[in-house]
Image (cartoon, rainbow, N blue to C red):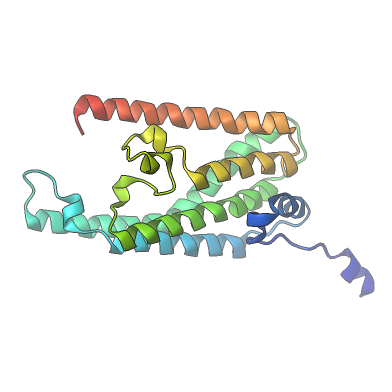
Length: 221
């Protein structure tokens, strides 16, 4: 019994991702936890999306030439879609991120399992889920539309609609830093390689954001 107690490895804590992420990643490397953390981040995400869904109004979705009944139907569909997205988004995002990271670490011939990376990304997503809930809750209170972007983004700070500036968002950047740290601690990649990977994906994201802004400007949407 004593040997079992001594050999039992402490598991990572979600709240620890705020003040000691490096320690949590080291624990994830040795003791992966998935289902309860995944349930928690999913519940947080659902709460965030429900908050913004309930705050939607027909005025937010009213387009030129649209009748009130059409806007009301669009609103109902938008609310339902938003609520469902709150459930699907974390699972999909974590799974896709894990697949990409798994390919990278295996290409680098590192002894890291899919389970370790899935657990890592689940804990990282906790920060994103908290960020979404905080942003959507404040936006609902002040009557701000979800289409205006996160209040913790550079776009909101500069009162801009730019998708590029919107990509510079507090929790998003925080998540990227944690991802680089996780790839180093859990994925066993060097710090330089880990941060290079994260920066490359961020630049790709900026490119798509810039393209979207350009298309919107051309079409006038």
